[in-house]
Image 1 (cartoon, rainbow, N blue to C red):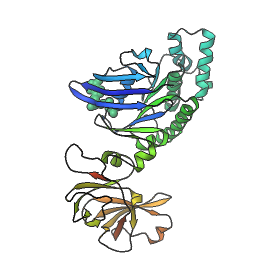
Image 2: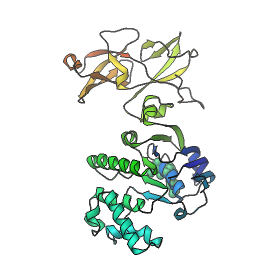
Image 3: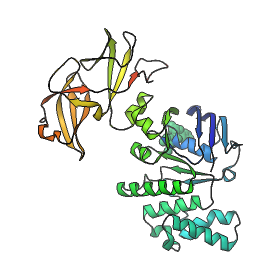
Image 4: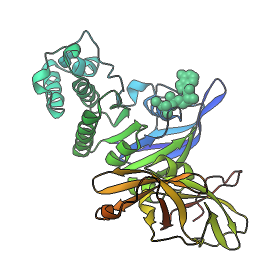
Length: 356
Ligand SMILES: Nc1ncnc2c1ncn2[C@@H]1O[C@H](COP(=O)(O)OP(=O)(O)O)[C@@H](O)[C@H]1O
Ligand SMILES: [Mg+2]
């Protein structure tokens, strides 16, 4: 177990900043996820913690110890990669035993530790197999056992499920989370998949272009985004441009009461999730008018995709039971916004920040 403290971390590649002065703290025993689109700096930050990269500026401490200049093998981290990175010429047993042999463990203790690690990932009977005789999910379990067998202070995982098919991804992410809770091991997990991040994490750090947009629990990230990028990246969400005029919020042809006092002329972006819009009986000054493009039955609800008359598109969820009066494709509809977060859309340093 460990806590990780990063202050003012900068990493440049040929003059370009891949990480722009990051400050973050990862708590002991927590499952901490780095989430963001491809190229935002997730792997770079993970490699910085592992010691495969050195930061150009800033400090890194693991369990209170200055770790920024320690070589990787002195940091006591275990790493799991997207492509498994197993040794193809070694058996499952020998793959898992590798780190313990390097540490010169006595033979009997080594065998006991390897078997225990394999049992934990439910691969006990597979010790004698070669990697090529395993499925993708089994290979990733071996990689997980290999990372855990050295009893690292920190477990680092870089998109470990990305090479697996959808069903297996859900099974294995559940197993990873159960194992992490059982061991109470501090875990830093990288993914670009927002649903995966919400499902497994204690806290999520959302990154965009080398910057931190928000750090928070899955609930906070989903329900209370602090930046327009977070709102747009997590879950289904329409981002509608608007402006404050005559004390009202003008959005897509509707005039809405502003959720907080805002200066006249302020340019804003309103974020609306499908559950933030209700089907209204008829038109009104505070309704969004449009036409139905698509109705998708999702089980618990039906999701309407509506092309707004003022331009742009929103999605609205109709609860189960409302299906009887489902509007036809092309039918005009009027939607009542039930409220969503509002962001600063004016160009400049505060751009994208939450206003109300
Ligand atoms: N070894 C490297 N040399 C040069 N540029 C790199 C290197 N590693 C990463 N980058 C650049 O740094 C940025 C962040 O990359 P990365 O951390 O791999 O993103 P992510 O893992 O979020 O997809 C990207 O612009 C990428 O091209
Ligand atoms: Mg990456």
